[in-house]
Image (cartoon, rainbow, N blue to C red):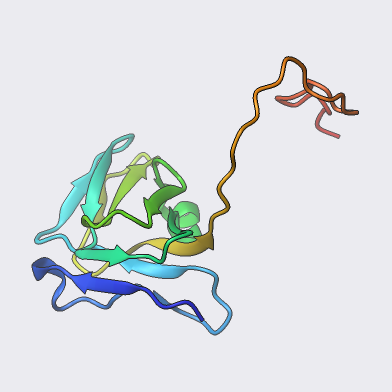
Length: 148
């Protein structure tokens, strides 16, 4: 079990902290810390506050991802999915919600708006070379293997 520090900001005092909703959940639900109902028009997006800031251990990141139920039932996603919260970031964690539906989306205080997954990060150092080693795939991409 990894330990990390979390701070409630003044506009989060009555909301749950991010938490796992089942015994084997990979992601923790995150809550909207809006002061009043917030509307996102069809095709629009907004930065939704969570009212928390964190200090993750060095070598870890938090990824903010869409909740599958919101995506399926309401056409809601996280615009920069997955959003990354770096270990050295100390500001408020916000979620950029995108409304892909044809209806207005209303975010209420305490709505579960996204999920957060903590990942270990490996750092890499690039070595510049004049040529890359060959592979079976080569430069094929963007659907080069077909659909079936």
